[in-house]
Length: 394
Ligand code: PMP
Ligand code: GLU
Image 1 (spheres, rainbow, N blue to C red):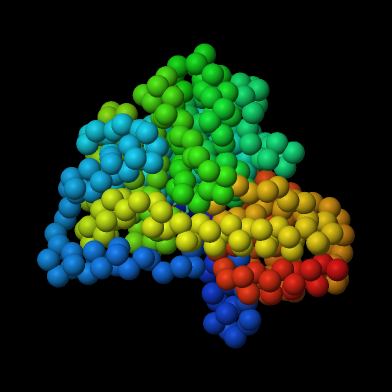
Image 2 (cartoon, rainbow, N blue to C red; image 1 turned 180 degrees about the horizontal axis):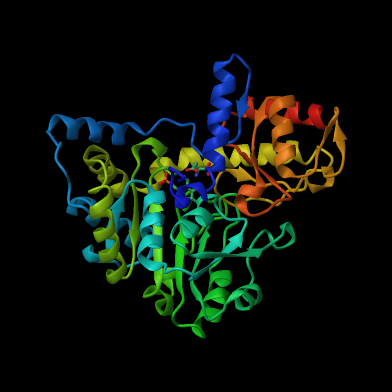
């Protein structure tokens, strides 16, 4: 008998985390690896947040918290939603979790029945398809290309809907393409959904503040979508707090209640010290972290400038997040220094072996023509990495 469950055996390993682990391993062996694989800000958590955590430890916050989060934190999140997004949520609509990843896993677990279809505009963040499949849902990939800035159009959405469609999941700003849906583009998708009142939307807004074009738009801002949208957000990216593991949702109360029940059997709620610290992050103006956004924009411009000088790299202009997702399919079928490149995975592994630069294959994001580079790295590292890539492919 197989010792492990089919559930875990059928699941793929997170490609982003696997590549990051591989890069770490090679570094430990003494190889001079530059990792552009993991989507993790290279800044320190701001001092005012660290100090709030230290205060919480000294004030003996050490017990289980309410499963769905401290009331003070949920109130601060309500204030944040109102201030930044014009969204009005009440306490029973907020659930704090161990990272936005758990928020997404909760929503999938409480919403998906076997066979339910979840529309995923491609490229999508790696974990979406596996989280859906883990819950016996069926990911329905909607392919987009660089020509539409990797965004799903209303026509594509319409064509993907079937009687089994349960939800649509997307991130904006998008990991991995950096695309940002404008309010008009979201409205066009919402118009399609008007004809399908039972379809829910999961709007992953974790890169909300890392936006180089200005106004962030949320699906739940449309009154006709509010009651069927789950807004997912967290502090990992904007506040450089990946390891603190706090994410949250604003959702219709019945979904929030179900997530609370689910989480109560699985984690008993998120870490108490991290929650206390995040209260201060939520209360702070987004301008306190603008310096990171400004630096990401400088790096975005640098990466685009350098990549566009390499033949065979075709990029869109990411408007947010900290990734660039070049189409490198012109290399398929070619042999580089004795290595035949058949697909994006071959290309990404070739760059790791030959240029000592870690990237992530687009296959993990549902787009086999691209690779993802995270520019959450210093300008020096970016310059050196792209210099090495250029040499390796020339
Ligand atoms: N959504 C997207 C689009 C992401 O890139 C990430 C990155 N980890 C997450 C959700 C999860 O974030 P976390 O669990 O760190 O809050
Ligand atoms: N979201 C980041 C990434 O895409 C972190 C890794 C992960 O959670 O998968 O690289």
